[in-house]
Length: 181
Length: 361
Image 1 (cartoon, rainbow over the protein chains, first blue to last red):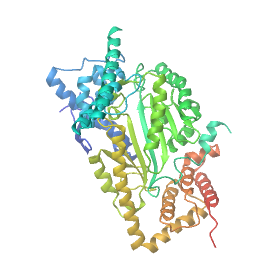
Image 2: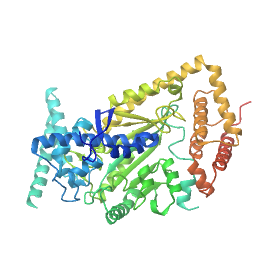
Image 3: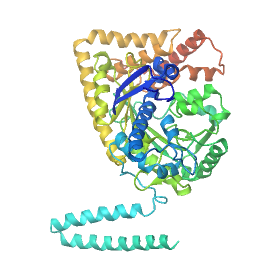
Image 4: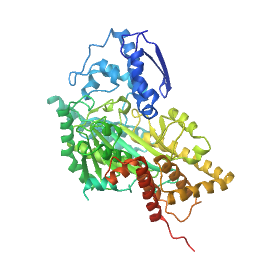
């Protein structure tokens, strides 16, 4: 078995970490393991390191699966910042906003493993969020509309229906405008 | 005194005032939002020119943040201050270790009451942080949202329709929200129940870690609990989940304290008054000792075993107990340990004197 970090020498040190995301195993050669000693032994750094270490493990295993599926992603790199998939594995950090588009396929399973989901459900920026905020409002109102119909509150339902209609029109205009550009 | 000195030398910080809900157990609540600029590589990948550009973008947007908050924000360049001064800011929770270690083109903006700080070029381009005393996650969240809205009005923020706010570390993706609560758990530490909380929290999507110390020993009995998940839930859901868990911990802590007060009343009373005695009269105090004694003092105050001292003294003792704070105040980085310990004891004595109430006769 080769070392997880340098991938060159034979792995002689085996570390198993058990935490929030399950089991992460690391196999290291002598020289890479020596570098790890810096934080394994010192308590103060120990708590900062574990997350990154987990990620490296996750990136690593995700790549393993990816390799089998598509025959390697090592060549892929971000056109904006130049970060390659290999860099990901080593740092556990993403390079820039464009990386998320470049590596979307690889990242989604990783996000699901960390968060149990890969779909954002929180705050949306008013400007750079595009028409997303509008879409969310429409979805919300439509849900309310359905509830109103079920409870036979037709007056309220009619009000909501008009609102949804107006918003949908607004959305169409905005999206039409974007296409035009 | 200039703005920076005021920021560094004030021993009173607005988020450590012994006020707020459940303040007998919850010292403070914090909200942190991570944001990035769309155009520039994230700080770990950016060169110095790009870091500078991010810094300048933030600077240009700061007036609108000041308008939104109705408060003045003091700018501090990490490169222009000493390592010691950065440590003081770190101990006051205004900056992170990351800014302490890599000062190049790193900046922090901070309001006068020291409960809002905006870090530039930390792990992400922008880290908005709001603090408040007691268990209260809503107020800082609203405040952080206000800052976020003001920044977003001026800057192009990296956002994806599906994945949410994009961050340098995938563990922050989505909401970019880290909500955390600072807990004082002497009851659970003395009754040896802390490990059960630490072990169970991952199942709830939360992480608990001691503020000082390690798994074996936690001087000061201070713990931080924070959400681990940031994607797939709304901000409100994330803080509701955290609040639920904290409420549970608070109940456990109170039960533990009640048990201590019932079965070990004399010992407990002796311990907390000894802490008052040492803090009031000792001539040399180490950093760890102050943490431990301050914890007992606070416990005594919360259990109403100690009378005649105002509870607000705790926050000041905690801040003044830090070596970096004292060294900075003395304007001398080369103090020996004994000199610092003497200075510390002197400061703590003064604080306790200041907060001593006149006992009713």
